Image 1 (cartoon, chains in turn orange, green):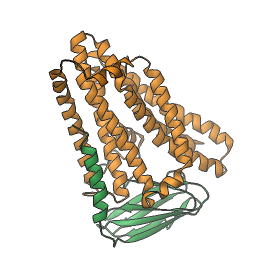
Image 2: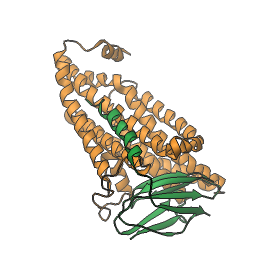
Image 3: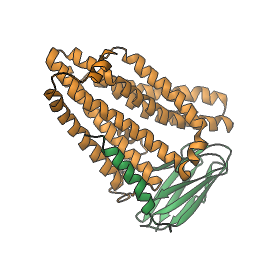
Image 4: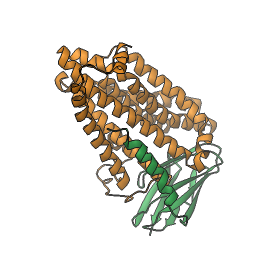
Length: 283
Length: 110
């Protein structure tokens, strides 16, 4: 039972940390609870589908389907997080300046809420499909119903509890710094996801490692420890990254920070927000 | 700002494997009764190699290593390919994430 609870906990933890950051980043946005809940539900349904189609995915693209699928999901999340932080840095500030109210700036975030919903769905989908396959194996392998009934909720609740703790911890950040902080966390989250994506691409031999192991800090903090795993999600920590991971990590940070710096300037040159942005705000 | 980057990165990702050479050492691992056979596998150090992991059980396994950063689900009755290395000399443990109690092994790179 403990083994089941532990695996479920670890997978749920990873998704829960991502959901918490997204939940914090959309603080004050109307109807965001429904969006996040919808993202989780969508992800869970997707996870079951992915698990059911695991054989097809595995065989795709000359046997590299699983790695490419994982990398694709991760890179899609990176793209959406990137879009959100760049968008927020231009329109959020613009609106805050015009309306002198943080509340309106927060509302502006709702237009990229759909993007963050997708990030939540993708996170749940990736971790969830592993849980589904694991539980299927456990059930088929003759694990007791009692073990499953006790282990799964224990793992889910444990992972969700850590996510909630992070969320409420983030809410303690003063409002003045709040969105800079959540944007910063989103940037590091995206960079870490990009780095993990390259790990899968190297595993499939689609990208060179550029140095299989740049350093080894597993004696201090191992990838397998719960803290190492949590930091892996939050800031992209890796005890022994490859060169290409570092390249993607740093490129993502650089591109997003540059985008966030430049976007407000472009926005300031325009007298009005573009019509598509306006219509998204209205919806 | 960020949009041209990913297509470019993906293009590189598609182009590079085409340039990779074919001759790469291969090593096989079998999962039977939720255990790895052999549990200790000798591999060359400082060389990239191909690991073929075959799952002979009726349930899914996950080949995983924190020491050499690999993670791959191995469905029942299938063989999956994982590229590893080049590794420095040393011992690198791996495990079956779905069967932590029984599925343990180590790569010895020398």
